[in-house]
Structures are given as structure tokens and as C-alpha cells.
Image 1 (spheres, helix red, strand yellow):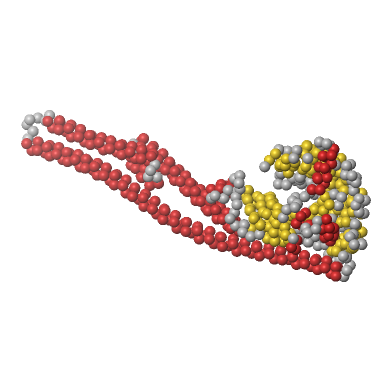
Image 2 (cartoon, helix red, strand yellow):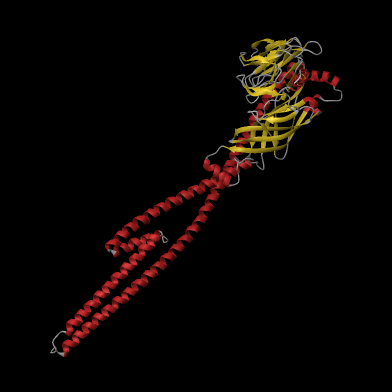
Length: 581
């Protein structure tokens, strides 16, 4: 890489530092969010810039939910119902609303390239069917810059050509339909689980009763006590007619009873035979009367035997009839159970409907509370704006910015045509810092703002907090706003060949030495730095290279990816330096 090419790439890098999209009227945005009402995912939408009133329109919104805070059992119930937040593509609800907070900006070049943001962030109200439109207002310094810019760019609008929108975060989600569906699914799953657990408990208790009864019946059969075994088997059959052990022991009982009856019959037959043999051995002189009586006794015993056979057959018939009746009773019991189940399902449906109605009332009350709080904040902002307007009307200041949530605003008094002195006031109008700085940037999320004294190329920069305290002397040639607790500062030469920049923390302490030719603000834990004679790479907050300085051009990380250029080819990399789509 020749020195000439390096110089050209350096100038190009300085021109596009911290820019997102230029020379275009539309942007696509992707904003990740985590654990808002238990949901995590991303919002994708398109914004378009319009010159009339410096407006921005958001449209084409899609919402992808990739996680939901719940128990493992609830997760399986939702997936079974077709609401799967955890698959690769996530889950997109049919209806939704989302609030995205962001800031508009334009790129300005005053010796170096930087973004000048609008006075305050705005909220885009987006949903799956409609978009939203907001207007932004830039400070007087930006408007004066636009006037000078138009001299070299006639018939063009700075906002369209050099503007953009930074979508910072998702502030609120409106997912009423999805939440109601989730509640319904989880409520139904809970009731089904309770029903299954109760059925299992009852089945276990019944099985234990059957096992105990069969154990006692088995002992009775082994000891030959059929009278004790029969009622035990009858109870076990009523509890579980299909139990194989019940059927087996019932078969053993019938067999033993048959064997017992047969034995009794054989004994009676044998007894009669013995009596006949005894009668045959009597003397021949036994009179006819005795023989007649003996024959009658034998006939009587045969009749007794026939009666025993009849009783045995009746017993068998009664056993079959009892089995048939028990089967009929089991079928009726099954019909009664399912009829009762329909009644319980109807009761559960009524209970859920009442629960849904109460939850809907609670949601409406909460929504009304949010609206009232929003209205209250708007009233407070309106009061602060009236104070700023009053200051302008009284001509105390030529410009008064919007008040921050902490109640401070930037003010400016013009000095000549194109310059002014900047200071700070509180919401009562009292000066915190008199107008003494030649420039003052907006306060960052860290509560600090860049200030400078002098004009390019002899300006000196530093930082103040919202009390007006200078946390660093105004000694730097270059200074960028704080981001993630770090700010780029350093020295600059007019030829831009020997710049030395590094990073300080919010106390003004140097955290990364001044050894880079140029650097961008930290984003997602990494910062782009330009190394002389090498190229652009990425360092962490300890100043260590995470990705080597090999690229001709590099942009800051966003959503885990960074756009880079190498040998004329543009592509994206992840935080390990691996190329990704």
C-alpha cells in the first residue's frame, strides 16, 4: 500500500467517521431488545427522510420474538400450541405495537467529520399495520452550517443528503392479543396437568388397594379357605375388572371350588358303595322288610348325590351371571365418568372466561395509567419549553435548547453573524454556566458534554458535567462524545498526518494511550482505530487488539456485526474477525 493510497484512505475515513447512511432518503433499522415484559427479540423497520419540516417516517415494521421468560413446563406447553419463540427463525405475532426511541442527525465537517444530533430523541410508534411520522429540530449552529453548506450544494437539502436516524432502543411493547393467548394456553396446560396428577394419584391408590386385596386372596387360596378368598376377589374385581391377576386368581378360585365339590361328590359316592357292599354281605335270612328298608336308604343317598350335583351346577351359573353383571356395572360406571367429565370441562371453561375478563380489566386499567403518566411527562416538557420560549422572547439568549430530564438546557448568545457563546441554565432560568464556550455539544448518556474554546484550527476541547464542572482541562485538539464510558481525545496536525488519539474515562483519566492516527467511539465493547502504515482494526477497553488492523476501512459494530472493506471488497465480520453475512 503506497503512501498516496494511505493518504486517500485516511481522508475518506475522516469524511465518513461515525456515519450510518448518507446520500440516501431511506434507511433500514434493526433494534434488539431484551426482557421487556419477559420478551426478547428484534424490531426491523424502514425510515424515510423528507425535507418538509425535517420529518422522518417509520414503516414496514416487523417484530421477531426469540425468547420468553417462563418455566420449562410452560415452554413445552407453548411450543406444543404452536407458539415457539426458541426456534431459529423466532416467532412473529400477528398483531403488535412497539415504541422505538432514536435520534436524528446530520453529518458536519469542520476539519474533521462528526455527527450533530437533533435537540432531543423522539419516539416512533410502530405496529404491524401502520407507521409513524415525527419531526426533528436541530440547533442554530447546525442551521447556520446548513446555510454555508448550501453555497456549495445548491438545490440540495442537508437533511436529505447528509442526514440519518439512529434507532437506539425499544422502550415499550404492546402485545395484548399474544399475552392473552399465552395466558389461555398456560391456564389450560396447568388444568390438564392437575387433572393428570389427580388421575394418577387415584390410579395409584386403587392399584395399591387391588394389590393388597389380591395378596390376601392368594394367601386364602393357598390355605384352601375359599370362603375368605371369594369376597376379596369380588372387591378387587370391582376396583379393576381388567386386572390380569384378578382374572388369574378368580380362575384358580373356580378351579379349587370345582375340585372341592367334585371331592365331596366322590366321597358321597364312595360312602354309598361301601354301604351297598355291607348290605350284600348280610345273611340270607334277613327278612324282606330289612332288604326293603336298605334299598330305600340307598335310593335316598343317590337322591342326595343328585341334589349336590344340581347345587354345583347352580353355583357355576351364579358365578357366570355375577361376572356378566359386574361387566355391565363397569360399563355404566365408565359412561357416568365421561358424563361427569363434560360437566367439569364446562365449569373450567366458565372459570377461565371469568379470569380472562378480570385480566382484561386489569390490562385496561394499566394502559390508562401509562397514558396518564405519559400525559404528565408531556405537561412537564411543555412547561420547560415555555420557560425556554420566555427566555427567547425576553431576548436574554439568542437560542435556548430543550431541557434534559435533569432540568438543564444549553443556551447561546450570538457573537457576530456566524458565531456564539454557549452556556447552561436550569429550569428556573438561573445560569449554571454563563455563555463562555465557543461550542457545546449535547450531553451524552454518561452525563457529560464536549465543550471547546477557540475556532478551528486553534480550538481546544474538554468536557463538563451538568453542574458546569470541567472534568478535564480544555487541552485537546480533538474530542468526541462519551460512549460506553469512554471518549476519544487527542492532538491533531493540520496535515492530518501525525494525529495522536486515545481514550479517557468519565473522570478524565487516560485509559488508552495516545498512539492511534484516528479512532471512532466505542460500540458494543469495541472501537475502530486507525494505525499508521497498517490499516483499521478493533480494540477493547483495555487497548488490546481484538481484530488486527488489516482493513482499508472499518465501521463500528452494530447488532454483533461490523462492515469492513479490504482490497476494494466490502463485507461484514463478527467480533472474532470471521466473515459473516
